Image 1 (cartoon, one colour):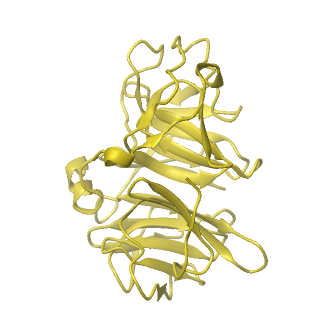
Image 2 (cartoon, rainbow, N blue to C red; image 1 turned 90 degrees about the vertical axis):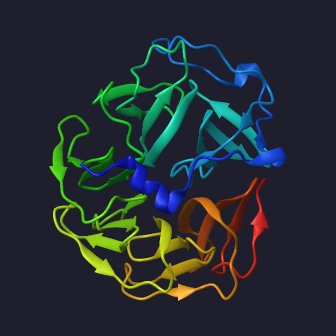
Length: 289
């Protein structure tokens, strides 16, 4: 197994967002915990101290933030907390729109510690543990058309979310991303970006202009990456070639991507205490929160 501590080379320690920490504007009634979870709703104004993942819900189009304090929905510059409080270390959507997550439940919840792999089919309101509850905390997690890859110190692949196979990888992945149709896998590591076309069984190293920390697929061929030195990278050909932003956008702690209007590509970024989007490769940004 590869020590999770090596992942800190890219991601760094979990740090507070500071005085400008994101704050939930939701009322206590905005959170509905699973009956099995047995947790009450958090109080209004919950401060978000770290965002682990950002993406758009494939059905509603709302921006989702998977955080140290649980799952939040961002709409019209307002945050609403969804479901039980779980430190969502890993978060991904399947091509069908189901949510997958891993991490650490809050004290008092009726969920295993660590969570293992959990699934939500109702937008994050309720979670069902599929496998490895009490055993795995997947710090990197990605779902695709052929299955799921997760890293908990060991890279693991599952076709159904219940049974797992160990995979070898040259270096510990800071982030994993799987293309929505072909299932091509990208992994960011301290040794460079890796690509796999066989569900993580074998890997090749890609050349990038900067060392990439975070990566996300916008569609089946377009990739967005955030470098360790603050640049935003875009690839139109599944990682073969890359274009870098002319100037750094800042240190990105969470990254998502998807198609925008026309032929544009949207990148969603958490930078410091802000949630931003760009559709021009980082030349300009628009604050969402």
